[in-house]
Length: 152
Image (cartoon, rainbow, N blue to C red; front, side):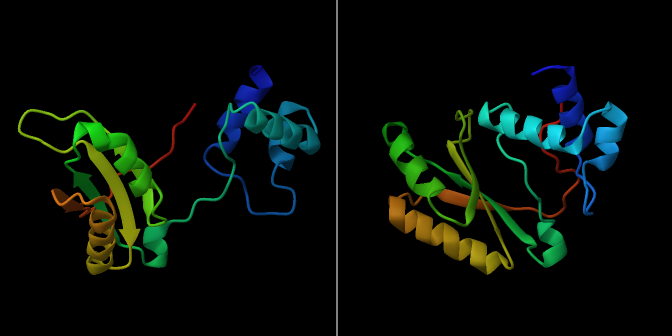
């Protein structure tokens, strides 16, 4: 990755304009062609410098307002197995293992987004059935203060 690659990442990480030539302004500013920007982005993706280049949907804007962090108390010896099952549910957008803390028995965390709280509860129930994990809680979001991806 060189200085131009870094500038391309910084100039695109907050979005690109929805127009026929979305890289034209960036190309002009960097003194390169739009095709070179596209080629560089493809190369960075192939080399896994960036994982993906895509659109983000504002889920709240389209009515997906029930967001639940499901916390699970999974026996340590089953973490890999259960985490793989949980991550396989299409409704799960994030699945993490985290260390337990004093007074906090939960070590697996899944994020579920839906239109209603009841939908999230139903997904959690199906996950519980699929994994035989009965000790879990749903923590629903009340308000979103900030949400961004990693920035360079």
